[in-house]
Image (spheres, rainbow over the protein chains, first blue to last red):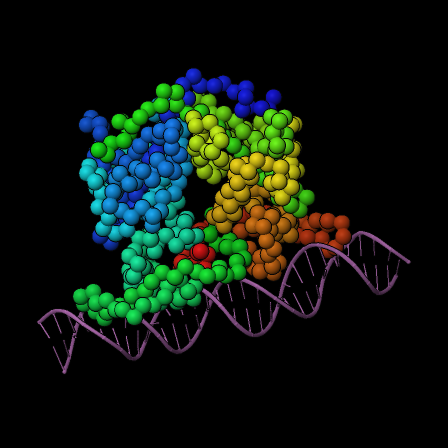
Length: 232
Length: 232
DNA sequence: GCGAATTAGTGGCAGGCTGTCAATAACGTC
DNA sequence: GACGTTATTGACAGCCTGCCACTAATTCGC
């Protein structure tokens, strides 16, 4: 028989669905994550990720968005990026009837979060999380990196006008590696992704930097061949 | 208050979780999808995707894998690629208590599927599916394309030895566009992804083609700069 | 047999993109 | 005004890409 949908064993009570959120932001030149102190005092792990339980009157996406709003009420919702990473079920040592939908989100620099939540550097965070949530943070970071090349999410972490050095720093944070300045700018201009304003900002020391604005690409260029070098 | 996990309204019965599968294969020079006739005779739509209901003793991943095995019992399971696309909840006109986890999978050319399932060209399939499942197929195809550059999934659709023309055809199917022969081969060899055997295969007409074997990349090359041209 | 048609495989070229170095510009500090 | 710092730009070599043209090895039709 091949119709599993009707004949399968049905659970008497169904699943509880949890939504877990990994919120990133640029934070002191590092990548920051929202964490809160663990609810359970006896836990060996001090921190945990923001979670919510899915109600029957909302979608997982909406639930994640609400959770983000609750954590960071002052953040502009529209520009915030929230995307699904994966759905896990029946994890070891967890309730058999529990499913977890993992999301990541991005917030602009300096966004305030409501207590007991706080920003913490990713690297500091990992050690204080339960192993499962540590994996979640890593998975979220991977998903984030995978989308950096596909969507202009870096611009959403910046104010409407910004310097190219700012932008490059964001990219370096998101990708976790240094980029070459000249190459970065050349590629950026070639893609017509930014347009210059006639304002300049002096950051203290050094030459003032010109301010730029994000310019949505008019038409995407012809797609190129296959990139085998990203495999493995 | 910010602890939603404990105070949130809890459902009395919890969610039913469905797993939906979009299985692709190369099929007559087109991309094929597994469909079955719709269970509901009164439905306006003739076809539907394979679905299963998640039991409380299995993970969604395992459930999807089992479903794939049921649809295509003879397929080698190990090389089959199955990956999560997304999780949808509370879709319009659906049960409020139902969550759907969507997967895509790949099967090698010529894999047989068990009745009432059948292979059908993607383009033919779309018109006969309910709009929601049509969207699912498109989402699965998008997810598939996003992974082609990241993982060597194209090789899993081919036998251990294959011709470069075979490989190129697979890539063209997966990506949905033509590739230039010379460029394709140049990039392929540069990445050392294949190694030549000393066998040749005559396909009927035309010059025989040399057979190649997949060679897992030893070390990935240094990552390059940001690709802004894929944005938008 | 022999040429046409067909498919495979290669070499080369122009142009684009990248990594890198170096030069210049415009500020604050002392 | 010299110096350190940051921004911006130009130049160059090398790699990669799209594209074209050519050669190679079969089958097919006659």
